[in-house]
Length: 266
Ligand code: SF4
Ligand code: SF4
Ligand code: F3S
Image (cartoon, rainbow, N blue to C red; front, top):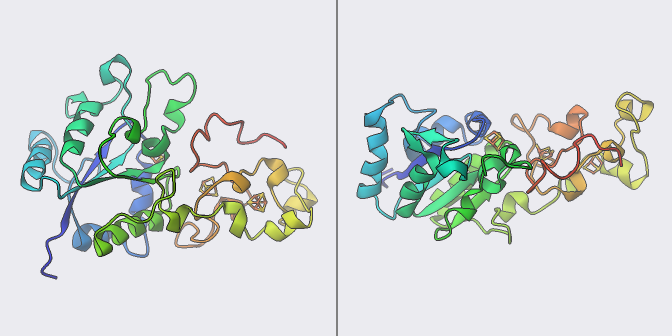
């Protein structure tokens, strides 16, 4: 209780803000407990009450006061084309704000597929040159938490781990926490027995779909997607895309937006 809370600066680049929407719905731990009791969320331009010059000044204050001791969380990415003009934050290109704020941080969390991989705004021909964080900031430890968005409890789980153990979680070779991204959706999917038995839905409304057969032939990307949806689940573990009758589109994988239609038949 006497330990100072770790300052977190949460920046928003080119993105849709649904990573934040996911985060605030975390049930275990509750997002309010993370924000009010576990970290000191000193800047987050979508959640903070203040705005304008005074709000922007907080970035500089934290940089100076907590040099090397704050966590930088980034949602979205910087577009590099036209000197970054496609994403302006605080009156200047987001890439400048990102570089400055990253310079003195302890570690970076790349929230979601925008920050981790580029996401749909980086889809060919990527007119704004949307670029993932690790390709712009190369001298800081980065934890990628991909997904579009990531699961709420995965987001708060990563923060909880970093605060509790004062180190980064063990990462795979792509920089994702192994504890949440160590298995494919397919490995723990409850429809897997149907896959193994050769029982597939062939149309969205056929008999197989009604019986809950495997969605592989309707384009499910579960066999090549690393994420925790089939174990942790969404909405407090209530369901996940496949349980709602839609195949996985691989939203946590690099280049999922350019790797074939979500509805490609196999
Ligand atoms: Fe939105 Fe997806 Fe980007 Fe998160 S990763 S900000 S949900 S587009
Ligand atoms: Fe695998 Fe998708 Fe079939 Fe589940 S629905 S068993 S993830 S192919
Ligand atoms: Fe995304 Fe597939 Fe999970 S689409 S939400 S990784 S089931």
